[in-house]
Image (cartoon, rainbow, N blue to C red; front, side):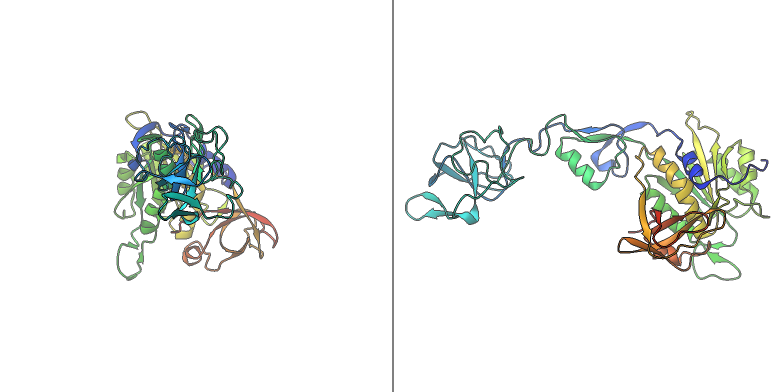
Length: 418
């Protein structure tokens, strides 16, 4: 594979990684949809709430008080009997409001008069209507109310009406989205398939366990990358550490059926860097061959031969140094995986520099930073082989060539954290 043009601009490299279509939609049960992206807008299948409900424990009342108590009470999930004018019935939070009820008297505001069977309102006055708790005009129970109309009632359709749009396509399915979908009537969601990733960690010098010894060091990226890429919407299959050499790398890339192969190391032109040779041997096409960013400039992105079903496949080559590999991941791997998974682009997160952020003379620099209020400060231990600064970081600042002065605004990239 011949040498390519000069390193790609950092922003352009990210744009190239994003220039892929999303994977096809699939239907998933709610329990299996977490971490996917919606392939179509989520619309309400029902009104929420689906009927007028009590917002408080207390009594459902009809008309002005005092009210005559009756009934055994209305619980959530029950079907209440209609309520006649002047009557009251105990009701639980979330229970359906009886037909004819005008309001709910809170338990702390009501008192059953001894011997009379009457319910009295102990509050000085019904008080003003409270936004979000009072019934909307025209709801099922808002007609003909003479006392605190709609007080402590959640009206039907207060949150949404059937067919209302709830979330756009591309929304990431979080636990909250699952809860909303369930409340809106869904058992299954149409989502984009999560991209499958094969992770290949390369290097004779790497140890999987124990202390560094005999000139060898511990593998930091094998533990770091799978959880991070999974958090970006990928299904990651880890591989054992691969030794340096053309044969093992070529065979692993050739035999992979994943949507994306992610490699660590072997991206430069050293004596044991065989990734370019392996890509040429499998018939890959380089899309990005080094990026004008520090650390991590020898990263690459390649288009692999299509799978047996014709789907496009890619390889992201990350440098072997840990912080450089992280820089490659946020530059190429994360945008590629998010787009393949159908996730909408998040808006840029900007912050003010509380201190000068040192930069590279010609290239973009990705610098670990920590927040101090609304601003960020640089962290030490930011060399390409270091992770100590990143472990304390709230993000990576995108520092333009030449650096950023105190008071300047810079983009902050997310980094893995609990």
